[in-house]
Amino acid sequence: MLTSQNDWDVLAADIKRWGKELGFGQVGITDTDLSEAESAHREWVAKGFHGAMDYMAKHGDKRTRPAELVPGTVRVISARMDYLPPAARDSMEVMEDGELAFISRYALGRDYHKVLRNRLQKLCDKIAETAGTFGYRVFTDSAPVLEVALAEKAGLGWRGKHTLLLSRDAGSWFFLGEIYTDLPLPVDQASQNHCGTCKACIDICPTQAIVAPYEVDARRCISYLTIELKDSIPVELRPLIGNRVYGCDDCQIACPWNRFAEVTEQPDFHVRHGLDNISLVELFGWDEATFDQRMAGSAIYRIGYVQWLRNLAVGLGNAPTSDAIIKALKDRAEHPSELVREHVLWALQRHAERHGVST
Image 1 (spheres, rainbow, N blue to C red):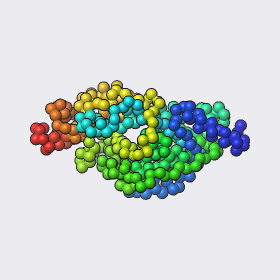
Image 2 (image 1 turned 180 degrees about the vertical axis):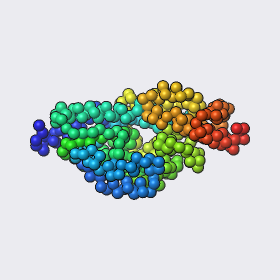
Image 3 (image 1 turned 30 degrees about the vertical axis):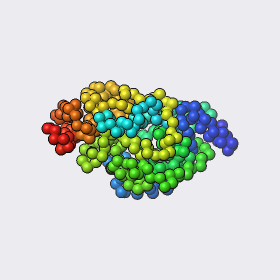
Image 4 (image 1 turned 90 degrees about the horizontal axis):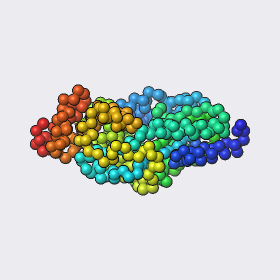
């Protein structure tokens, strides 16, 4: 039984060591006071910047008050796991080749939700061996949790101007996961901000979704448009998306702190099915069975086949005109989904307007 402060100090140190052994880059501990983040989150929602992500508002204060989401919570164990895959083709090279499909680096391998959840559960099992039965709940981007605010308080990094967490030692190419617990562990010192006057992430954003330092209007963000938005992508934003068919890494690519990022040691996050260097036409040619088979176990599978085709149609509309691209689009012109047909028609019209190609 843990009775003294020294016992809790030792357990906290052990948790961080066990976390490293389980593949986490860093583990930190914080209390549950998110009052400062709560006001900022309320203001963000009030501006409508969450777009169609209703879950950002519907849980009320549970997102900013961990003890209301999981009664009894007094501490949050926050952990990061690097995901930058080794040997992936250079991101800028892919984005500069309009015939290729750019997929956010985090989605090139297996779905991170299961990987992090399993590792966090193993960490809880290790804690129980020392602390005995204790109250906890594991989260991996799966519930109303302000993971960046918690990670910042736990000393894992600071919120960058693009709103992602930044670490001096690891940049931003990592996932976050949390353990809400009733263990009164000692807390770590919150991180200091090191963005300074840099605004590289703001300047590079293709859709200018970073409307102010530390504030993103999700409705303009390509990650939101290609993943979270289930309906038609606003016409005025489609040309700005380029060939980014799942997510967008521009703000991370531009960030100077990412020169310290290291490739992941987790095989689950290595590139699968050549998704780091694959053409839009090839992906658009997949039937639903092929999509289901190749994207099984991938974060991309979550958006579904129709939304995948919608995104690819936009990429093809922005691609250099070629017989292969026009044929690929025409082959989908009568697709059963109205959403797909609309984006295919837009793409064909875009080629016609630019090059006089018959649609």
